[in-house]
Length: 459
Image 1 (cartoon, rainbow, N blue to C red):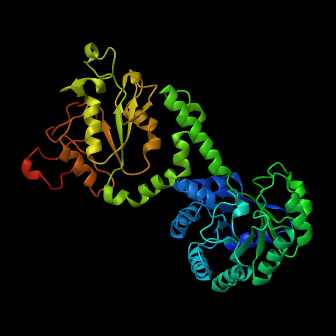
Image 2: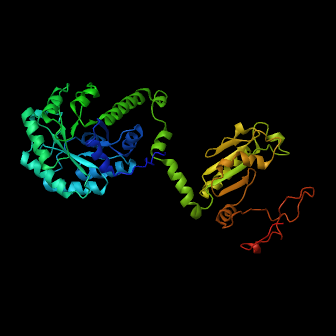
Image 3: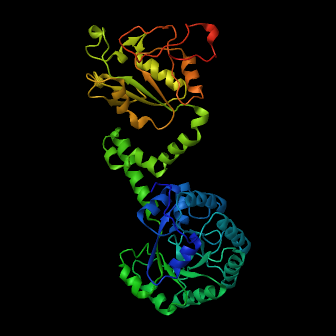
């Protein structure tokens, strides 16, 4: 499975989230805040994503006070949904306004295949619950119930879920108020209740669960009481646990450590082995899929996309100047012969260049090429060298000897040819020079500028 290719699932994302909320087993949802983290969550094996308001605002570099607009949040959700087919439950703060804002939000989320939204019973604009939570005012129960009803009436997907988040314990209003609010929200149509606590022990949550007695699915966020074993939540009848902000926090600590180390040491040596390789980023971006698609969809319009240079031999009669290098590395007008070839290919848009070396292949030092070695170069010929580079023959490919110089129009016309196989031959040679060899090809007529654009046969 590629980074982009999701596992095949028949149920919609919203149906899968609803199944998790109603499951008889304890389920877990992991935070993500952009497309890359969403893909990482999927690859880790989680079944759903929590699009955290704190994490999304943090990746924008703003506070968790609705400083990022709801449209900016929705735009990020679109990247997350594209990167992973997992159900996404949005941390929708207070719904970004009144009942009408919630209606519009639900419609926009459904358009982007977001499975559900969690809204909290605080006033807009909100502040993160762990910042002076007891001082934050709560919304009126009837007003918040109106938001829930408006959201449920606006959804077109029957499985789209609205989770009502109760902040009474955070705000210091007590257990009775928390239960009263949760019941009102359930009757207003909420598909699940999220009960929140800022204590380092789960006592409030467990007490609420006992009072709640399974009236509707119960969701928790154990950010503060993180040391509680999951078995405690299972016995309490919790439906879903949300790991709410741990990827953004992990990324932050890693970036801080790496930035500090590089700044102080002024070298990358100390960090390179403990950060993700660049190729891992390419894999998560699914760069291979793009390369494969490029070969399919751009091959006709762009002609050849790769080249193979046969450069295994030392060169007959060149022994005096090839003691320490192959003939393709001999300087011609100030730069190696191979450099002239590579530059010609690149000017034609051919950037995937493989050089088959043999004699002193270790001395082939030209940027922009891949080198493969014909270890048997002394006893074999060009066909064996070509076989060494067979893996590069994935599409239209220019095959060239390594000791050629030619004008740019020759390569252009070769690549532009509609023929399945096209060969460029020096037409100044009209007779085979080596009469003992019968597989030479030569032109049927002598070289003449008047022949340009006309069909010439090979003999």
